[in-house]
Length: 234
Image (cartoon, rainbow, N blue to C red; front, side, top):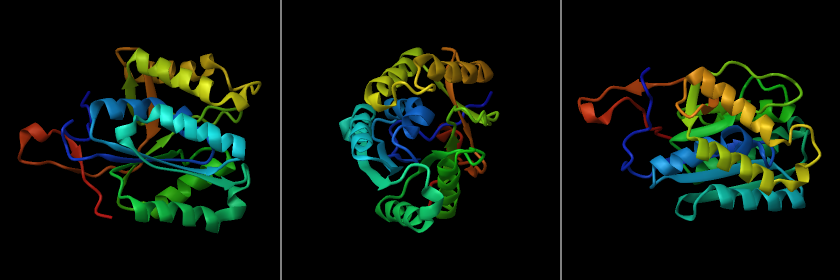
């Protein structure tokens, strides 16, 4: 299988924007991928945008971002205060927050919610992401939940077992406010990564799955450049 990369490890700073409706969404959906990107691209910059929170959840999200993103790679970390479950009623504010982040950075890669997600907040964030970042590579991550709305990914990021374990430990440690909820179990998080690892034949048995609706590739004359996606112009 042909592997897709984001360029050579020593490439100029790779900027990644992670967008989540709720304070734990990014870590659940793509936390392992964020860890992997930092390891492979030491000059990367990772930015977080979360739209909803309470004071307690905001503190959890800030601590989780600090633990997930090493200091040299830590860019903009913004945690909004909109109400959980009501984002469709606050569309203008959501669009303003996402547009504000776009003005501040020009990400090479955007990680956001899957468009087929049944949760109203997740679904809206996916739509707004596509409305805002119209010349960028977007990977849509998945969130397992009661709705049973997971779909078969069309791209995967294999993860070493240590990275998968670190992701799970970080979520369980950072988001203590979620203890007692049915989904908040390490075996649930592990099960999804094991399934995606099986589907992608990951050597470790672990992977995260994404939907990539649109990908534009340019083949260069430099054979050492590999198979690389195009840098967004704005």
